[in-house]
Length: 119
Length: 112
Image (cartoon, rainbow over all chains, first blue to last red):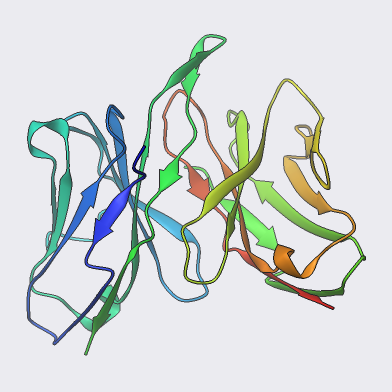
């Protein structure tokens, strides 16, 4: 079974340009997450989709970031216009919740990340 | 919201030694604590996790301990090998809210 795939693996753009990152989750996984890691820092949460709906977008830095998941399958994350501080590795992860006691929990499967460099 | 702190940021050990990485969390409602390993240029992968109804879990050379009272959990790797070299991330989650919060990572270097 294919894992989480992300495209592109690396993107170098100039400040003010636009970049769109794509994530294909594991087939059948309802949950899709976007995370970002800046060098030496934590893997920071950006947002969470359940199917096509945004469950939590509290981590999105500002309105220059737009995430979509049309049809509940793949997702895109667009940065427009890009700024220097947007540089980092953007990870996508997916999961399928399993019932544990009275709550749900599922392992996160990560993609290999999209490294964004803004010059 | 949840905040996870992780120490040390880097850890160098000799092959065969033990390595311990420690994390603390702030939200007492968190009840799921996974550890991810990221090898250079690869994706983070789950290596072990623990839930709040147990205090310790072991899988071959790796173990995780959880102290809910003190709100900290640790990863223990025994008999380290060069292939254990990687960045390790701890994380915490309240399964009701479904967001996994990560620590800043520990770069482990195991020298032959």
